[in-house]
Length: 232
Image 1 (tube, rainbow, N blue to C red):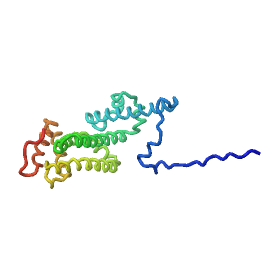
Image 2 (cartoon, helix red, strand yellow):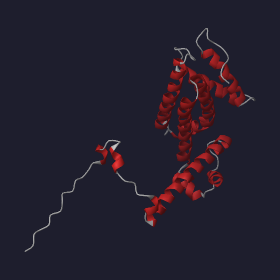
Image 3 (tube, helix red, strand yellow):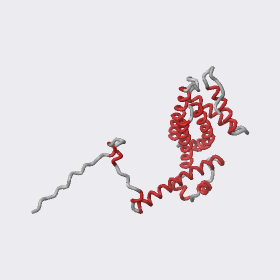
Image 4 (cartoon, one colour):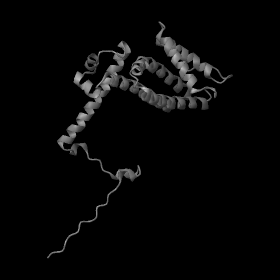
């Protein structure tokens, strides 16, 4: 009777317990070595993501031009997809409105991070406020539509947190650089920018009015005795 071969013990590793550096031990399978089915799944996922991005972009333009009740079939056509694709990703109009609202805020915050890394503090703040004014105008009608449905409180809270985090960091940088007085609060700055957005919406000057008011406001935010020409 032959000897029984024993299998070596299997050592299970909990992936979550690995440090970020030890995760490099896990090999990534090259895409060109994947079986045809897996490659097709990845391609479908990439196509689906592109469709979502196109639908959100088309919806943003349609909602800005025609309000939150813009025809969904027209949005799908503008995005270059069928109505079935639109409803597969966004089963209801409310889901699409919510996605556009969230996307606008996420893009604004991403732009804030980029400005903080590439521009001086005062210029970064005013450029971000320009974007904030645009987003306020874009999402005003969307916010009303979401509020009517009574399902937007969590979304609004999340977006409020993101905007406060990004705007707060930009304002703090401007304060540290001596471009803004220490007693200025983010809440006051955002209220001011919202007022400029509303003024632009009700004026024949449009966005040009908001732009001029933002530039003028930066001079008023500067520490007393150091006021000069606002950044262009």
